[in-house]
Length: 361
Image 1 (cartoon, rainbow, N blue to C red):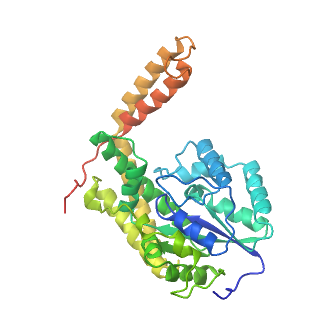
Image 2: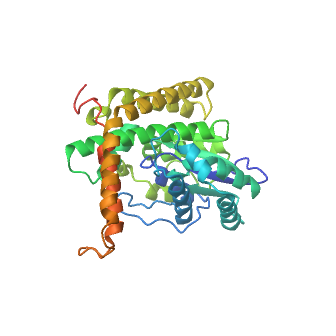
Image 3: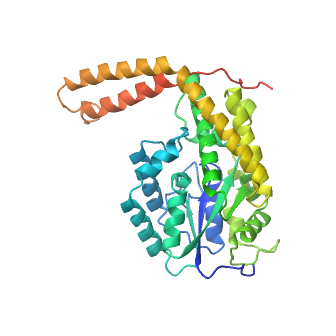
């Protein structure tokens, strides 16, 4: 493919999108198209046999931000981004600048992929500018029902139906919050949206669209019929989970918000990343989600208070116990007790809202 109109400065492509939406597939494809994807990477596993193409350094960096903010890697709380910003220190910013300065030296086009970057997209933009890189955002899109179905298939450990029901609900909420934040944080920036299904069905036009909208240059001949390493990398069978809303048990209000977000992201995808009416509608959906989240928190008030009381009582009991290793694990009773308290709080606080049942039209 002929070189695109690259800027005088290098380009940093930050791959965004919720987990299980094809971020690994797009990052690996760009690697095979000649872009630099700094390693070392997380290793492949059964959930991602082709590999994650996810920098271990970036993963650890983003996890430190999330841990310092007291948020999940994918958090459903509308205020999670503000907490992430407050937890990001000048020292961490300097670390990111140092990473980019070291790993991007000598490369015109660099790709970093980690869904957790949703909490630090502005930070990456500022750090990239400091080292002379122009940032471009690539957002992967996969229907939320399929994302939750995929997460349930590979990550869920619950066997109890009620627990799986809660897992589906809070993961849809996480998809909603992360999708809204990612779109809002990259609005007005140089960005593109890629549908996971397009990438699997015919990667050439999907990645030619990326090259055009982000101004990238690829290696190799992308002419249809000409063999390219990406042909061996992308496997359409990677889409092993096909789920619709009817297969999930999620409250109707939350489904409507998630589906509305998906519909507007499709508008942005078709419009090359910018559409004022779509962004305005996404802001309205964000406000609606904020109201739903606040209502759910209010509904669960008594359950949360009960869990807090039990946690305080359990903590008082723990304080009177000697710090001796448990027979099963050798860990201190104090350590295992803390994890048990967290589990109690989470399980008791999870409210069960009426929603659509599997198989319901």
